[in-house]
Length: 279
Image (cartoon, rainbow, N blue to C red; front, side, top):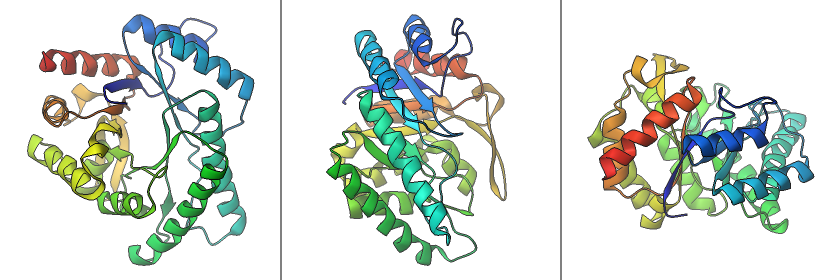
């Protein structure tokens, strides 16, 4: 995927009843947006017939599908049952999206559980290698992307995400959440800092990675403990015009999900701003 597709985080509020993912695609197309990130954050049950129908409709409308796996994942859990469930959540989300011909899935990989990051990293890496092996054996065609996280208690700094993807390789690729990065560091909210992230992606994963991104962006409320909640763009400190300029200057391709509480409103605002600045 070379173009940058701009997606809503779930079903738009203005979707006609009965609200569901199929009718949401009609509303996405009406709004002139590019697709939807399916939110399986509370759980995943794979319905292959439904996903195939969803994929066929998305294809007919020229829309892109991604998916967010359940929140209940921790690849550093000391409990085998939780590790097993984490595998199922990640792989079932990938299987569902693969049936729909989707692009990539994202997930929150782990918590440090009061352990130093250098002890957590190799454990998470081994699990992700195993998950990648299973995905290869099943011939899944979607990317599997650990997300950059917004709290210092969570595995997923910028360096951790980029390094683990470089060391494992496809289908393990990064999801860069710029709101989380801002909340985690108190920085990365200017053109120069956005540019630094894209330069680091290029340096770590190669220039081709800039054409194959999965990005989350929104306003965010945060404290010294990191992320608290996502905010509407205009009620936050998000410098979204500077972010647009960085996306354009670095010719970023892939998908961008605007994770705002104002689902279609902010996604449309961002797309219109991006288009106007691209002309």
